[in-house]
Image (cartoon, rainbow, N blue to C red):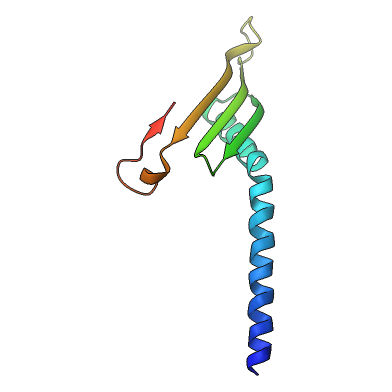
Length: 103
């Protein structure tokens, strides 16, 4: 019985590790999709982002190429264009109050 529990626990840990690695590999795309969707809802017009890179081990996130389209009736194609922004979170303060974010 204890051998089955040991094997079951090891299999569960292996599955959790695979899921965590998968999430980390997909994190940039997930965040990019959320930013585009929520940004479009917030501005009421299309928001497109060229690239997102999150480095959890350094506490940094970079967003490149933010494009906010102008609503119909405006001459310029974009209301806002941001080439790049990088923020850094002091990991020692990440779960405390206040959290320190450098942009």
